[in-house]
Every structure is written in structure tokens, then in C-alpha cells.
Length: 111
Image (cartoon, rainbow, N blue to C red; front, side):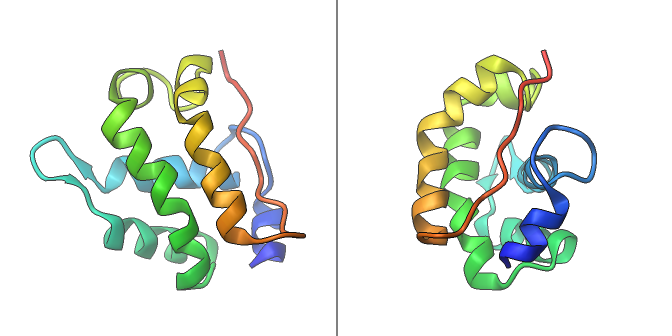
């Protein structure tokens, strides 16, 4: 899983790990039914090759973003500073879940 995340890399461009997570999050959020964690993890698996267990590490921040950062992330820019600031607290969960010695690629601000 580490090699797959490293290969996709950090940043905000199409094809990077953070952009892929953002795309999967947006695809699996519905204003009426909310965030679909199972489909989010399936999307992450399909688009990154990560295992299910590793993919679940990113559910918390994605759900937090969908529930608490809609304005700045879903209708603003996923890599805008206000979105990154909003989800920042929750992203630490992913690193903790991934475990020590695993480097999770990070998003960089796009504007």
C-alpha cells in the first residue's frame, strides 16, 4: 500500500493520491443521502490499488469533510486553503490508521 500511495504522490494535480481521494469523496456524497463510506473505499481501491483495510483509513477525513466542510470543499475547491484547513484536523486520523513508518501523501494548496 505504501508503494502505491508513494507512486501517486502528494500535491493537487490529477492523478495524485490526494486528488484521487477528493474525487472519490465527491463521487460518493449525495446531498440527500449523505456520505457512502463503502462506495468511497471501493472507489479508492479501484483508483489506487490499495487494500480495503488501507482504504478505510481515509473514510474518517472524507466523512468529516462531507459533513463539516461542504461549502469550502464541495462547492469551493477541494485543494483551496479553506478546505485544507477545514479537513486538516481529521487528516491526522488517516496517518494514525496507516501506522508508524507509513507516509501518507499530502495535498498542497491550489489557490
